[in-house]
Image (cartoon, rainbow, N blue to C red; front, side):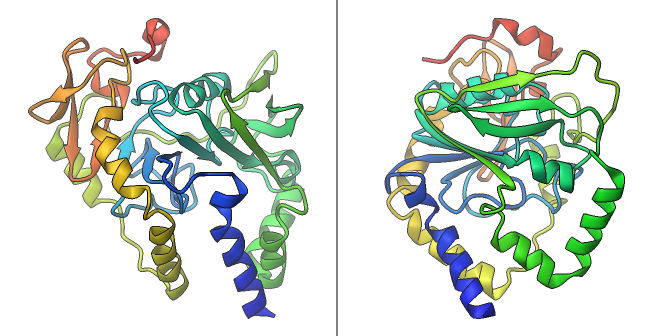
Length: 316
């Protein structure tokens, strides 16, 4: 039974590109890759290297390029990505509409996944801001009135999930059948509706950058040294090899295009080679690069504030 279950889960994992109609040679970006980057993604993106406050495990790093960036200000040119994946990130962000605009801007198609409304009510994560459902060709975000829907229900579920192996496995095996995830495939434009509460009074845990101001290449290297490298299990090693096989028609293409795809996160202008890695002359900002890690957060721009980005223009 355990072997059958493992093979079924492996097949579902392997079938992701087919299920979502991703061509073998498509350049795929995973926005908010976190501790479990998608097997088909050629390029990874996440904002937080060290702070794991909003994810269960440390950031996963491998040979694929990682763009350290803010999902609301993606440093990619218009339609430079063939396909974008955004899994278990949208429920965290303050402005889902801005996220969906950015996903639509950088890619021609994509997939968004979030914990479903029932799962959020049943278990709940105090750092999630939204209940999420998929309906009518769009995702609906409804602001949570409090961190946990029901503290007693949360404690009951959390105890079962952590201490009852059979319950955990049953839940994971049937997560889609039970309607516990909201899934959304889109082409052309990612659409969402947002219902905010008139007064939001609860605070939630949020991840933070190690520095609120610009960091140097040396400081970036120090942060990378603090990201642990967990040992790979036999199952994970097999998946890693299979994933590389699934990307064999696209990894080289992605690496060849990457440099021309990137732009300034603020003005969306061209980046040139600079002393730290890449530079934007218009914003007078340096963006450090260490190996295959590109640090392109808008906080690299001196005096940057989110409200100052209302004049952001699209890249060409």
